[in-house]
Image (tube, one colour):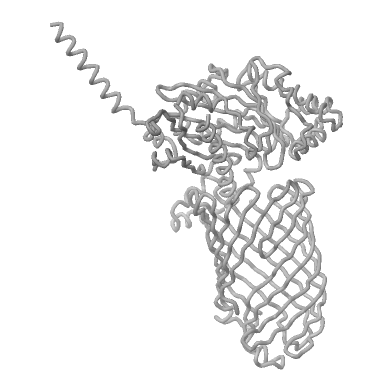
Amino acid sequence: MRWLAVFYTVGICCALSVAALAADPGPVESLKSFSDFQQVDLNRLLSGDVLSERGSLMDFPNGISAQTCFVVPVSAEETAKRLQLWDPSPHGELKVFAFHPLHTPCELADFQQLDFKMSQRPVRWLLEKTVASTPVKSDLNLTHDEAQQLAACVQKRADPQKVSDCWAKLLLGRASAFQQKGLDGAQPYDAAGESVSPPIQLRTMLREQLAIAHEFSPILKRIGLLGNETTPSLTPFYYWTIFDADYHGTISLGAIYQLAVGDHFQLVDMEYYVSGNYYTSATLFEVWPVEVGGKPGALVWRGDFFAAPMLAFTKGTERIAYGALMLQDIKKEIHFFQVEAKTR
Amino acid sequence: MKPGLIALLALLLPGATIWAANSMSISQELDVEYGYIGGAGTRGGGLNVGSVDEHSADLKYVISPQLNKDLLLRIGFEWQRFTFGVPDHAPLPGVLQQASLVLGFDYQIADEWLMRVEVQPGIYSDFRDITWRDVDAPLVVGAAYLASADLQWFFGLRVDARTQYPVLPAAGVRWKFSDVWTLNFMLPKPRLEYDVNERLKLYLGAEIQAGTFAVGQDFGSTRGLPRLDNAIVDYLELHLGSGCSWKITPTVTIEAEAGFMPYRSFDFFDPNIVFRSHDAPYGQIACHARF
């Protein structure tokens, strides 16, 4: 009877394995199931192509989205790790002046490399906008209290060191609140008389992309962008960065979360504070293991969601052009990421 | 947009029903311009017409419903009028006028390429005695190559069977070469622009105003030049000037400019009689709304 028991056990295991294989549609089919990509030629992706699609028009007037898909010649686990820690600043074309991790809990020293002495015109622009800010009027994304504190700190002096110190204090306050309270700590901006909350903007955009929101629900629920959880139960990589957004210096605070889901990985890079020009953005990644030339590689789907005030007034062909240009920037970033992955 | 019109368009056009749900899927353009050119000495056909001044006005409205992610329709109208202060019995039209529909589409043909096809069927005439000869439908086919956020190339072709040059190609570029300077070298209004701030822009530039019109059946006879009866005139006007553009709201921009009109021509190309004007000051105001 023992051999019969072994036979049945082996038989059941085989049946379950077959069922599991049948149930697992594979990376390409998974990708097709929620994305805008209905034709995915893995061979073209393996040769370095990047698939891209502008997102369809949103009801949310400030929102725009785009999707891309590419392959990286390192394992899925390693790709996910690199995506979480990737520093774009060495690539001049991406116009990122500085990118720095934050400690947990963050401290003032984390922002010591924030430098308004840089000769770049966009940084100069941000310095001028900072000096021009008053408690009642500012072109920057600030609360009334922040505007008041910044004005009192800067005292209308265009001293780069002073402005750097004032911004460091403001960013420390924002980053600490986020580290402690998650999205509840991301205070809304008081922009042009209305309150603009980055988390609400992100949730609104995700709600319009039900298939994507459903696919990413494991990680989105854990970080509080979906569901009732407000304090993230995942520990992210926290960072601050300063970059050129359409000739305007922009500082942002972000957090990149990663979650293993079965054999693949989901990541969310969320900007919970942006100093100006736009409100917020989130980049979602799903990373599956694939084989590239007999070696482990990763198939990556990327979705970008971006909210900006001027988008509400950007319609028709202008909006199509805006989406096309946004995709160009994203593809440039992907290109540098792929190049790094090949060389390191 | 009125619900009745949406319902009608929904019957005619697939995908039109999405418009009712999404206000972002309909864009509208309204352009209004008025200009005045001072008296300019005008000669042609062996005649000295004397000093001719000019009032011009243009009103264009286009509504663009987005049919799908890549395709927008363009439906609208344009009215343009040139009024010339010509002495009595001078062989020049007192009015040249266009009243046309705007029909076309914008389409994204590739990641970096956008195209526009637009036809403007209507009446292009001195509006003295309107016949089928006054009806025309110039076609414009254009493409834009989005090299980057700072550099875009434009290519265009104007097709008008009635004019002396039925096919006119054109190319242009928009190059933002610094945070405040943009070379907007696109016809018919090539400009070098300087951003004073987010709302105010100063520019130096040129403008070409052109059109092809039919004049009345007895236009020439009543002016002592019977060869001009029922003729077609290619009208061309060149401006060189500077101005400012002020974005009063995110959707409305007003412009004011002044300068010099070095050249203007009324080319009755079939009888080969050309009247030319030179050197006069001009002023122009405009309002552009995108909503």
